[in-house]
Structure formats: C-alpha cells, structure tokens
Image (tube, rainbow, N blue to C red; front, side, top):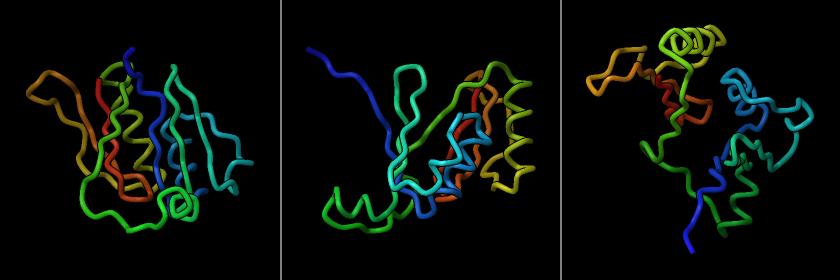
Length: 125
C-alpha cells in the first residue's frame, strides 16, 4: 500500500489575513471562516489547511516560530498570461513580491510572492 498526499497545513498568525491572501490567489473560502481556529479548503483531491498558532501549540505540544524558507507551495497557472495577471492582482492587493515574473531556464514562466506569514508562494505556467 502506498501513500497519498492528502493535506498541506499552514500555521498562521492571523487567520483573516491569511485567508484573504488565499482568496486573492483564487481559493473559494467563506468569510465566516475568518474567526475559525482551523480551516480546510479542498482542491482536486488535496486539502490546504490553516491553523492558528494556538491550535499548533495544542497539536505539537508547543510552538517555535520558524526561521528561513521552510517549504514551497507552487500553484500551476493556465498559461503565462494568466500567471502575469494573477501576480499583478496579488501585488495590487498589497501583498509582497519575492520575485517578479520571469521566464525560467527550465522553460516555465515563474513568479514568487509572499503570503502574510512570509511563506514563499510560487506561481508557474
């Protein structure tokens, strides 16, 4: 029996700020989730989960703020034009760019933004 990636969890300092970013990214997340300590969003068989620091403390028995790049979330865009448009939308909402869109040597259009917790979010096509 093999394993299957089912869920990616993100610990967030402020649930509303985090969810607002992922809404701009394109996830359909109800506004009522802003006050929840744990939120899950399913997309094509994989869940993206958000937990407050308080939930993380309960699950892990404590919490130390991570330092440095920890994990990459990479989102496939329909094409280069869609990537550029999504990047512009994210930046126009006040979120921080890590790298503007560029044509990578491996053949993809690529851009990197930061979510409110400083996680690097890659967009590619």
